[in-house]
Length: 203
Image 1 (tube, rainbow, N blue to C red):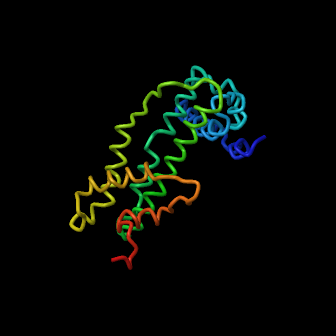
Image 2: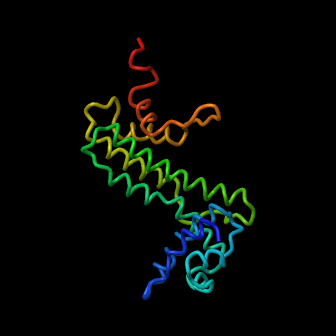
Image 3: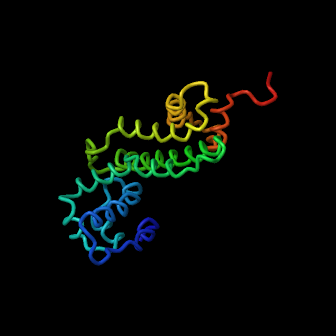
């Protein structure tokens, strides 16, 4: 049994679990396995990791492709990231708020990348067009949550919070990555975003 499977063996079907709850449990169990094995992961492996019979999967999903679709839609969904953004304490200094936001969104992006990269490059049939994953709507909602974090500083900002949020969101998603330089930490990224590229002693 792999580490991913071992980490999932604690998930068990609770007595009286509704079909929707069972569906959610299966999706959450399957996502790390899909990230590890791609579309080649079997429903038998997912069932073992979830601690259920394989037939239980097909009582809530028509087939494996539908399960893959549901997992991709869940990975692309902004819901978890938005909940984390909404939970950030706005009484904190702005750099701390944005650093927390950066961490939450980087984790969201990593999850998306793991699922899509695995399905795209590790063999098996790609699930195709994802139902229920609206990129434009997701982006709009994430930007709105970021703007709420910036709202207390509206009077001090050069541009409206909504525009600053869009710029910050764009920086997170386009941060350049090179082999020679380590990635910026969330705190470093926020410092550059808020204060520019010049050091404090530069003229």
